[in-house]
Image (cartoon, rainbow, N blue to C red; front, side, top):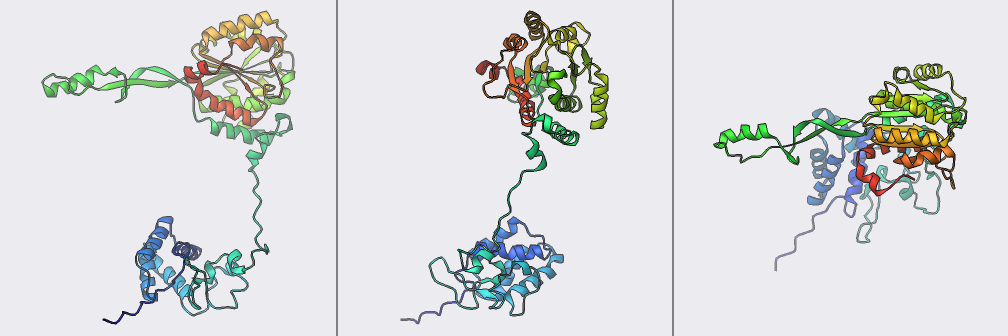
Length: 413
């Protein structure tokens, strides 16, 4: 019988190849070498296909897998020599060095997948072992303190009531509202564009293609309407009962005017158009100009009278076919019969009516106020608006206002 061939020694026998590749790439990154996830995966796969039998084979396997630019070759060779030579390691990551491994050899024995343990001088380099593994004592948690996760400044203020926010915090959350306004309600336009999924046949392109096939319409070109942004009109209550929410609602109104072509009005005892002042480039200047324009704020409330005044004015055509957003707590000095008449007119002219009430999210709250109870049958949605989280959800809800099926499935609360 022929003599058995001697087993070829394999470098890093019993070592987790993926862990080694990740640890070695981490050393290269700390040295300034730009290595991505793709190169790391290439190294792990190369070590699995061709296990290195010597330091030279390992060098070329890692170099071919990780080095993509000639300028990075010097950094790679320096890090490779630091990890695999018998010279003392360079100070690339001294903080990651476990206390017990600094006095021992360069390599640390690691148990393999089959239960065996690597011999001395093999295994993972000491710099690849985390402190928890290198310590050897699982019960000790010295130096293993995890950072406590804290919310961001905006996330911490998202559920804070409006009356507890200062001017700077309100402006910051107003900027977040403008960033969240990514979807806008749309309507069907009169212009069309070609679309394979369209329901309408485009006659001119179809006939033009039929000229090539003896006037036989082999290829049918279809088209669909181009959607247009739907007009949004917002009415904000700035009476005394809405003092705490007035500044936040002005930020929402400014988001509507700056991001899209919206018409915004403030009302207390009379109606004031704030579209032009709120379009100012400076947020603080826009709010100051809007506050100066409303000279009857923090007084009484006439919701029905102001809705009627809007419909009777030359701005009443902006409501036709648009989405009307009313932000108010429903307290009205006008009789409920006047609210019923005004809301009925508004509902016939508008496409959808959305009502934001700061007290709608209170547990056990019911719309028993005369004005709110009279307006509720004509609203498609009644949403809470006591925090910036509620306003953000209301902003996201605007996109659903273009889909009539959603309103048939879930009526207003």
